[in-house]
Image (cartoon, rainbow, N blue to C red; front, side, top):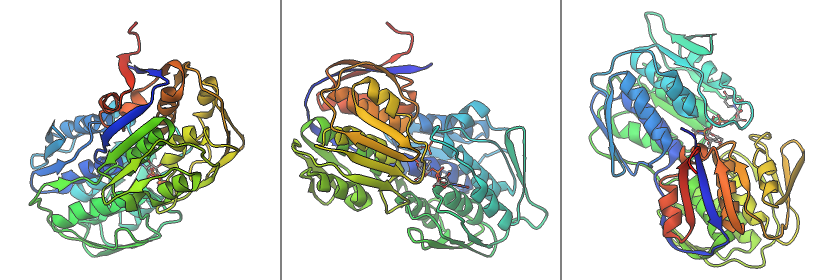
Length: 425
Ligand SMILES: CC(=O)N[C@H]1[C@@H](OP(=O)(O)OP(=O)(O)OC[C@H]2O[C@@H](n3ccc(=O)[nH]c3=O)[C@H](O)[C@@H]2O)O[C@H](CO)[C@@H](O)[C@@H]1O
Ligand SMILES: C=C(OP(=O)(O)O)C(=O)O
């Protein structure tokens, strides 16, 4: 059922908000769990639609899971190979991690092409190049990838990624962690979520060195056994979204459960704009912001400015005195929020692919808009909170895919917001 988000905007928000576990870690950790020879437990799991869809995929392989109060238990000990449910696979991008984890577990995988956010072309050639280097045969037909290995199975290999890819780095780790011999991934992505995955696997006996740098070395091990609960790192993209929201409509907001080092490229931009952030060990206070300066933002792989945060920052740029620019080098077509923000009165445009210009916009006015993807939805949510009157965000399911208990968190801060079925009055 499609959902819509209704926001009665124009209020100032204040108080405290606590960030949940990282979506992009969680969606890798859940497929990784099937590599274990024991039950696995995760803590600080965000309450997001992606988790429920991954549970449906696990269930189809007789991997039972239970998700309660931020704790997710997964028992992969009775796993069966089975066709994966294509609706759930298509509901999120990260379902492609079952290619790596099934390959690591069974030496073969059949997975429908993943879905996920429509943010422009999202090829997976580097994942496939990695699987092939590890000794797999990969075929594509009918929107499905068939990955097989011969009798010898997988073996370690040296893989140089042609571009820095989070997904390819993770998928190769998943496939290689139990493959005999040494695997070296060069030009690997350095995102904190990759370190989180490596920590989880290493605590089960894996030998992965260098996660967080651009060279990752893996010695294959035969068995992986969970001995302790793995606590998922805080979601730096959710944190960045609340930082923006706080700068845009906050009257003093304290954001808890943050690793500030994961957000340095983002917080330094906010400071450059004149937001007086008070950064502590694991929380950031955002006072009411005034007199903001325009900035230029260029997205790049971690530790650069995250593409996933360019849209959530946009509403704050609409308050700055002058013209700001965003250059999205990772997803130049990630501009589907622009037309919707204009409906609310934003002065924002993209005349050259990958370049977005944002000018100081007058008071926004509530309207009916559609979220084309998760972070476009986040930008619309913040803009809706800024706008006078009511904003209805259609296709709000995209927001629920990755924002932990968002209605509850916004309500705690004093927002008037609800989620309804699309056909509700
Ligand atoms: C579940 C998850 O973690 N999603 C994140 C992940 O997506 P995802 O892992 O899909 O993104 P990648 O890091 O792989 O993509 C980076 C760039 O490389 C290109 N590319 C990637 C793989 C490949 O085989 N060939 C290729 O050309 C992509 O089109 C893109 O331009 O990183 C993105 C970039 O930070 C984020 O926006 C997503 O939130
Ligand atoms: C693009 C994103 O997600 P996914 O890769 O899961 O589609 C995102 O989180 O902004």
